[in-house]
Image (cartoon, rainbow, N blue to C red; front, side, top):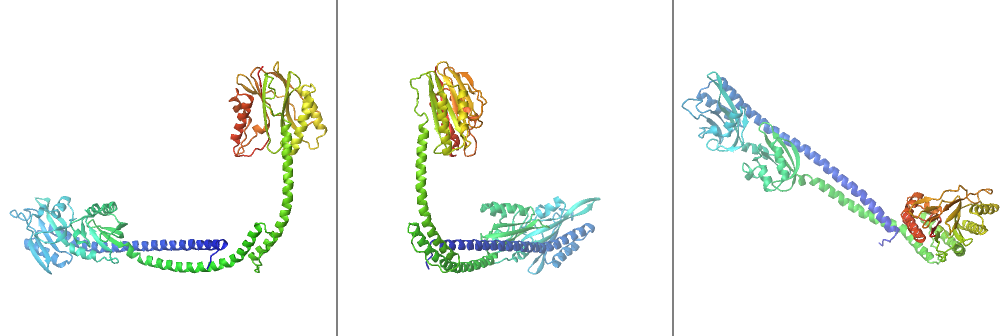
Length: 638
């Protein structure tokens, strides 16, 4: 079955991906939850099994401990003859199945002045109770020395009792005392021996799965029981850890000999496979029992269950995949026909027939929408053709208007190459095709240069027309020989006489006497220009307190006069400079402009304006220009 590229494929991918994610999430959650639950049950069962084994061993050891304890107390209270002592020892061995052998080992010469060693020993061998005297110097052995030094009963480390019991055993030794010359004196120890074979049988009875087992180590880490018989009495848990460079096993060993309990993950010494280890101490002997639970064997049912769930999921996933393909194609086939018709329409063939879709669902509604779109496109293209032609005509007219506007501004620099008293430069960058800013400069006679800069309220064509009117009227008034304040007053009267759009314009106008340096100016609401002294000081020209042109018909305008010295500069600008904004809607600001001017006080007018324009563009970055920018700079060289 062919799978279409497009909505069918997207439906298949989307649904199957969603289904896979849901299924995978459920599978993973089920696996983790089941594994965690079984692990918890194993941990609880391991704790129970280990504790039960410890209790079983401990019960026997406690019962064994009572025998020499009672016998030692009996010896302290009574003075027994040799035959009575032998009878007591034999009775202990005979009547206690867990005890392999027992003795009462006396301190040298404590039993008789002429007898150094007296330690009668009864032990079991081939279902019989045998007797012998311990032939070696027992008073140098640990099972005798340690309880004597510590003054308390002690379980010995396992050892091979050569010459007496002749097996590997552990001895519980209880010191006993007597009165000699009225003073309490150590007389010897009473012992009960336990065969390690008995402990091995108890521990080896622990079987978990096929490879799980139990083992027992002494308080020094020596293996007392283990499935690998070569380890018993020959290796410790620490030597095994050293041989395998297993720091984790060494750490667990230290916890075990400290009498701590725990549940850890380790690798089996026997199988080298992952296992869970539970360990618990034997309180009486300070030995520790460890039980290993094979991880893979105990988790086999979980893995089997999850494999079965995975197989069923894959089968269901494949079935769902086939069903989704059928459903997706039943939706996609009509859409494919619509797509082919739409592609033909998109190429310009608006008469392409839209296929008939008989279904009353969204696909049928889409086909009807395509037919409506086809008719709408025909109508729209016709209207768009007419609109584009009109737009091109307007854009052409705006371009002509821009050229006319820029043409009425002085644009040749230097404008007065024969006048060495001054140097002047100006620039205007409208925010749209045409703008409302203007600048102008011209000589009204041989000695007086008029300079003007203005900013019309508003943007676009109305502002451009109003700017042209203002500039023309301003030049006409200035050439009549009027003072700056009178020029602005007459200009305001003319503007207010016929201003239906209620536009207004801010104007700075001044006259410079190029011979004396006297500069008389009047400011009609415009940004105050900067005076840059020849010594580098930057300051604003004093304000004249006048309102913008076109606001009030009978407004009165004042003027001020300053004297320019050689090297002094004038910097005139519109608010498009200080109100230029960057991407963060921050303004270029008067403060920033004054700072930039202070750094370029020795530049010529053209270089100064180019530097400021560059700073504005760097500051604005990618932000669009929001207002017209006009700058005029003049230097007095007289």
